[in-house]
Amino acid sequence: MKKLFITVGFLLAACNLIAQKKENPGDTLIKHSDLSEVIVSVNKWEQKLNEVPNKITKINKAEILRNNPQTSADLLNQTGTVFIQKSQLGGGSPMIRGFATNRVLLVVDGVRMNNAIYRSGNLQNIISIDALSTQTAEVIFGPGSLIYGSDAIGGVMDFHTLNARFSKDKKISLNGSAVARYSTANNEKTFHADINAGWKKLSLLSSFSYSKFGDLKMGKHGGQDSYLRPEYVERIAGIDSIVKNDNPRIQRFSGYDQINFLQKVRYAPTENFDIQYSFIYAGTGNAPRYDRLIQYRNGKLRFAEWYYGPMLWRMHNLQLLHSKKNV
Image (tube, rainbow, N blue to C red; front, side):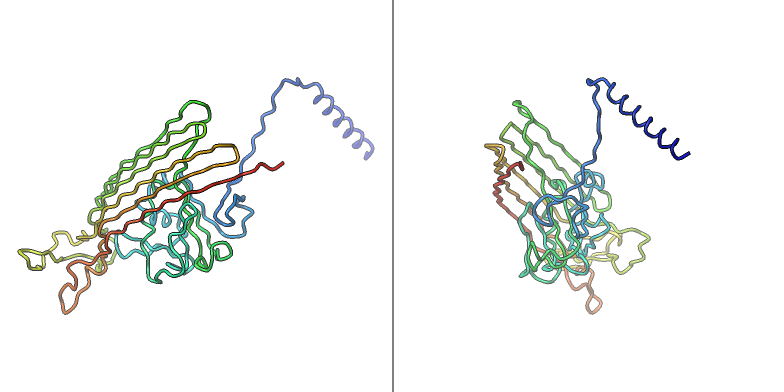
């Protein structure tokens, strides 16, 4: 019986070989292979995600558009893996594994936005990054001290802005996008537009965003009456006066505005060299700190206004990339 099984097995194998030889050589065999997702924030070069020992969360452009975050702080918060401390609408201080501020590193296009000598209190500078101009974001959960230094002991948040893309042929390639958004919870009005012009060796990218946030309206069923705004201080005839709030759920004087601009120029003189210059500008108006505005002392509101002053961020970034094909 065993000899019979072995004989049948050899016959089937022989038939299979004969059938393969009779195949039309002109037939095309289509193979599908899935590309593993790569990350660059851990060791500064591309690696497969499943080959990196650190726990990493990667946010791609499709997720950003689907989640539609108002700020970059909200972008991280929507992952469910980064805690965001907010004392006001115009803020957001990321916390990773209990570390924050000068113990977590914020990187934009390979450039640090903070370091170990920054204050240990909450920092709101992450909102300067335009969420709608972000291509991808990577969060490393764990010490990144080996690559980034001791200021990354808690983790690293690595943001990559929109890429300037070349044309695939000799013709100019033009593409872009636009977003308009209105939110009822905080009366937010946002407009964003970006455009990319690409040639064979040269590409130009421009991106612009503007957001105006009104007073935040809190929900009815939160059970946090301590955050209600029954009254506020307004200056009338040169005198600070207590004014009754018609709707205590509206957090008066919590809104702010923000503008972001991104410009990139990319040039590739040869296949091995890639030169890119980028300019980033971000500016916010006065961002009121709401928890201070509802503080009382001796039965009266303690502050008429309390805000972080305008925050301006300008960055020039020149990068030269030399790559060589492996033989």
